[in-house]
Length: 242
Image 1: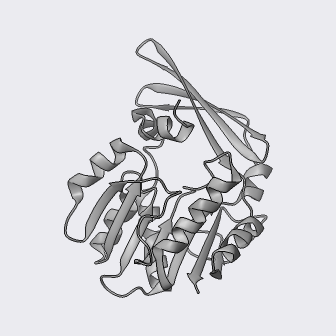
Image 2: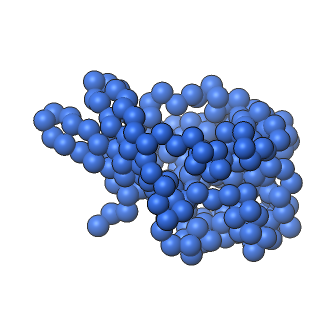
């Protein structure tokens, strides 16, 4: 039986529901990261859980040598049409090391973390990210601000996309936010689930210290303004491999 993230992220309905994601906001975030990190032209960047490649493609346009991986075969098949000498995509599990001491930067963006039920799997993911970096390399992990998410949780909402009415129910359970997504299409009923662990800044600090990662900046939005636990939309950690 597949994990929720294997079936949901590989479903066409995932991309229908979230088709309005702001690509300009994503590009602006990357512009601010590049300005802050100042990676060398042609630097090797790994895009973890790259999805349909919006971050990887833009980074490649900026002149970087970019590798993206994702667990979804459908996503990677889509991404591979854009490959070139400095852009490549692979099917890969984020819990496993991809290449050792190879990348100048590893980007884990848009809350592409916290999918697993076992603590060990989250630890393995951080370890894999750290081991992929060269000495002195940079990890950027962009996550939701769990404190604010919990304080403003909307238990139920509906959203219509491409003529499909999605019913979305959310609740907090055992330290995770659970989102149940149900809808009918073509006379058939569907139900998918999302589960994300509600990690805090302190949780990430503990993980990073285990794998020789020193945090150099904690930001709360895509402009890289300072993190405020009560008000920030995001929790963005930038760490250097010692």
